[in-house]
Image 1 (spheres, one colour):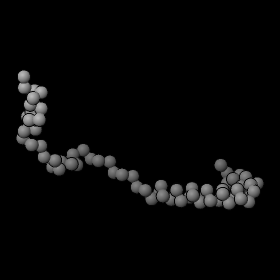
Image 2: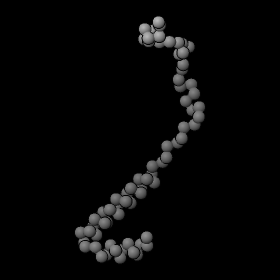
Image 3: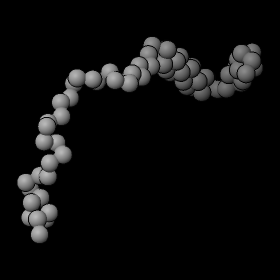
Image 4: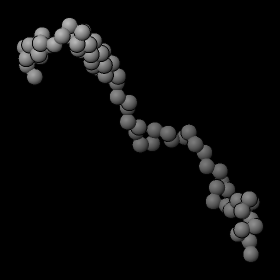
Length: 72
């Protein structure tokens, strides 16, 4: 939208609505500034957690808690 069109429409509004429009424009400017300052999170790289987790040797063994369900 052309800035002169916005200005002419703003000039047609009553004084109290002009103040509300000015407040809203200020809000939008602050929002745009915040969005500019927020940097996107880096995407995780495959294998970046290598060595952070250890699997126990008995990982695939049946759990004792389920013995009554698995033994006939």
